[in-house]
Length: 244
Picture 1 (cartoon, rainbow, N blue to C red):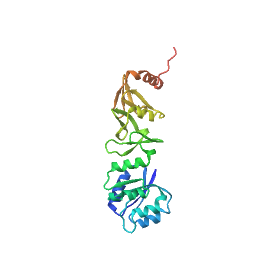
Picture 2 (picture 1 turned 90 degrees about the vertical axis):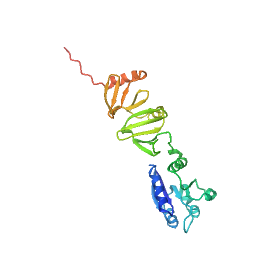
Picture 3 (picture 1 turned 30 degrees about the horizontal axis):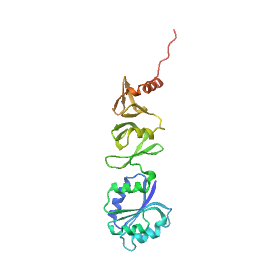
C-alpha cells in the first residue's frame, strides 16, 4: 500500500484526482490540502510519504516553493497543473512526473505504474497472499480477485476471462502466463486447451464433459486425457467390495 497526499487549492481538482486514486487499490489517500502553508506544516511532521500530488499555481505559496521544503518528506513527487510552462521548473524541483490538466485516468494510472514499477502489472497478475489484482480490459481498473472465488479462466486470444462467483473480468494475459503465475496454487486444473478450472467449483462430470457451478461446460481435450483420468481415479469414492 502506498500512502499519498494531494495539495491543490481547487476542490474540483481534488475531487477528480480522488476519483482516480480510488481506481488504484494500492494507493491510500491519507489527506488533502487546499492551503499549501497548512500542508507544509503537517507534512513535515508526518512519516515519509510514498507520493505527493502537488498543484503549482496556488495562493500564498506556489507548488514549486512548497516542493523545495517537502521534497525530502516523500519518495515520489508529481506536479499536477494546467500550465505547460512549468515543465522545466518541475524538472528543476526534482519532480518525478508532470501531469498536465486535464489528464485522463489512463494517464494517471500509467504514471503511477512508471513511478512504482514493482507494482506495475498491466499484463500480469499481482499476487498478494489469497488474492490478485488484474487490470480490467473494459475500464482499466485494477480489480481485486479473491483466488478462492475463481471458478474458471477462459482463453480469449490475447486475453483471459476470469469467471468468479461474483463477476467475470477480462484482462490482457495469455492462459499460459496465468498458469505459470499460479503454479503454486492448489486446486487449479487444466483438462482443456482453452480453460483452467477450480476443482472445488465442479458441479458434475458427465462422460467427456465437466459442468461448473456457474454453467460453464468444458470438454476434455485428448492431450489432457491422462491427467483427467488420474484426477478421477484419485477423487472417485468407490464402494468396498463385499466378500462372499
